[in-house]
Length: 217
Image 1 (tube, rainbow, N blue to C red):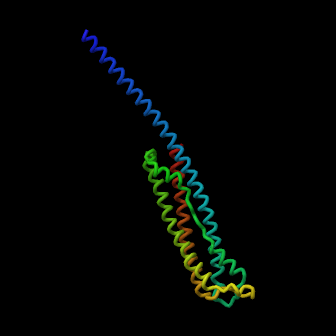
Image 2: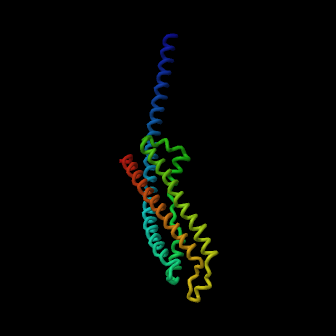
Image 3: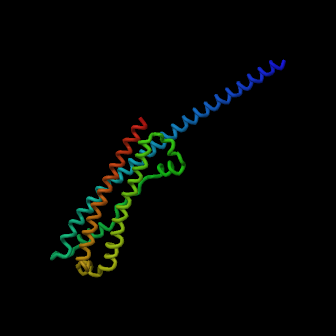
């Protein structure tokens, strides 16, 4: 009787262990499927963000090129025998406007803050993602330097070294043309740096998009 009871108990224990094992395996399988779907969604959204960033950076290249042309037109006029005119003033105010870049990084921040970056088990892809957003930090530095030059120097000049009462009299408002010319020359140099950084940003976008495509296909 005791032997039969022992066998029955052992059989029940085995059945319970098997049940737990099967349930655990099913849950793990369901979690894996869920993780794969979540990973795919992250990568899809990330690719969309990077494509939008690339488009913005390409537009920035066009805008920077136009501003470089404007600077090149301003420099020969300042501190020369040519009289200031409305075109010069319009050109000066055209380069005051910033060419900004604000990356779409919500998906990336969510990956980092939620800890879901671990879902991306491909080492090269994970490295490419992290490197890409590190590149954005370097790009931002060049943009900030250029913006600071506009604010601190050109903006200051337009407030403190221009007499706008001269305009109704048909005269140019800019008082110290040598100072203004030097500022524009400095801006032209930072436009070169800004454009180079923007081109590297576009290249970084292309690299990451290719890595994501490879992971999704």
